[in-house]
Amino acid sequence: MKSNDKIVHRGATMTADWPERIRLAQKVQHCEIGGEILPRIRYGHERADLAGNKGPCLSCGVIAGEFHVEGCPKEQCPGCGAPRFTCDCEPYEDS
Image 1 (cartoon, rainbow, N blue to C red):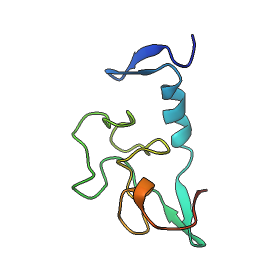
Image 2 (image 1 turned 135 degrees about the vertical axis):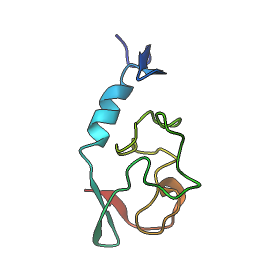
Image 3 (image 1 turned 120 degrees about the vertical axis):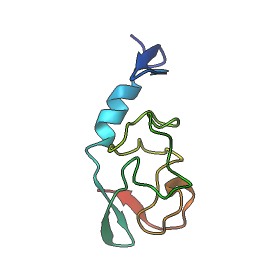
């Protein structure tokens, strides 16, 4: 199966490589922002305007309690509270 082939995972259609990306995202539990190690914010624990519905994240497919996949627009930055991919926290590195 090629990575661009579509599959259904947790009721959502996604590329065949996406479940592995979800699995790998769970291994990155902290990030470093400006030299400080902070815990990443799990899906379902974001501030209200970033939080999704009760089902899988509509952007990256994770379920409540899991960490978002890198680049998901719904992941909240633990440093400033803004969406991670648009925040000004630098450097921001997974650890």
